[in-house]
Length: 619
Image (cartoon, rainbow, N blue to C red; front, side, top):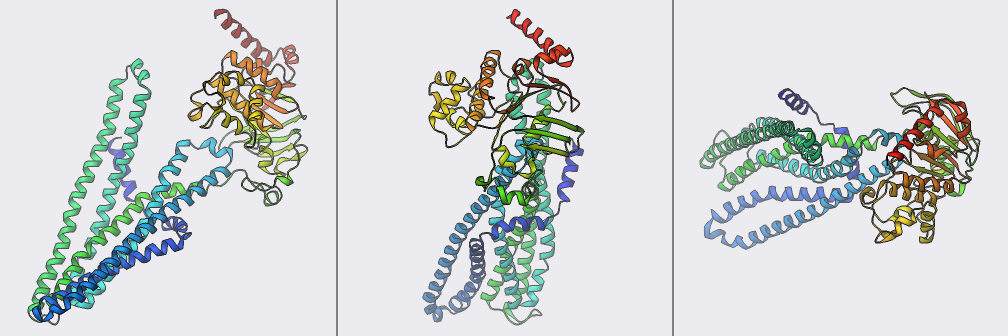
């Protein structure tokens, strides 16, 4: 990061303003727990009130006990009891405040996370297609706890600080309004200085945090890419890049420390000036009446000075809270934007009323799905992208196996994603069993879909848990039967713990082929009526491919199937093979029929056959 970039980043941070509408949205989560919130606020106001009473108790002790000497000695015990009562009440209020605010923080965090996770379940496939996992995880893991903590504690701190400041000003003006106004002259410059320096300090800390993320990433890449670095002899360039990032972080850290070092003495100086004014003018008033009013008692002067010195801490605290709100605003914007993300694909209110939604499905109203699929004049374009399909027509009979081949970007995956209603046509209709699938719920369709991806995802847990993920109520016998059907049982029972073997994060302890077989078993257990294989065999070895080919014959029986194929050997038995080029069907037929045409499919197949034969000979 060069000097100009750093300066631009600083300017951007300085110019940010607090969006109170945004914080109002988040405050609504606190208001869901009004009793806890108001109890915390009330206890902080009690604490502020007692803090304001202490100088008056000191005033009483000086004027009524110390100055009077022996004649006031009888007031010590009642005074001590009253003082002790205030200490106990304040201690109890602080404990209660911590308990209530801690509860509020946890409850808010839970509520926001719950709403965010619910939103993630509702969002369409297109959202995940264009949104990085790291972005979503940062919102859920980093931003939400930070905002919950800030609202729970800062809101109550604002009430304490605001209440204490107002109370101090009232006491100062009520005790001696002329002297009080003289002391309060210091407050405007203090407020300006506090806000100015807090913003600048926080801007530097933001740069430090951003650079820390960059440096962490550099460490990660340096460790994960160590072999590549060695083979490309990039050690010196990597070190120079790392040194540049670390230098930027060092500069920002030093600047933040310098600004803090300047800010603290300025605040102390302003506070000392106010105290000096109170001591000088008030001290003269203790001796004799002055222009500031009648004679003050020693106890009154002590209380006055106490209010003066204590006035500055809450002002700094308020400035810090508002500066921190500026700092946290980016987190607030990201969380609210996630919660407000519109779903690209939604069911109509009439459909939801009949079929329910993903959180309250009305399965009793779901008709059976047989598997007849028809595209009628379907056109489709991704947002901001070129048109992929235009006036596309296709009719698939119940139980028919359709294979899709073609170049990358031809529209093969788009077609199956439209069938699954992960996306919807820009124009035209897709009919399932003769009706536009938008007339029924997404869940009705997707509950009867089986989708096997090129890179299958396994969840943390055992192999048995992952297969049962397709149907949670399945028995162990049904799980094993599904595994045997796709020829996964053989490798599973060879493992130390068999079906109870932990797969690791994302299935890291298994090979790609083994994960693929488990994903097949999982889908089979769910017993889908429409089956989709999207490049499911392109990343596995030929031995596992042979097992999967054998499994496919069993899996696809009596099911409408769409196979997006890279390896053409897996689709020779398909009922129809469609060659997709430029979003259109250019060839259609069985394997033998397309070979006789000697067109695109023939050239593609013979090329692959020659390459595979050469590989086998070399092996």
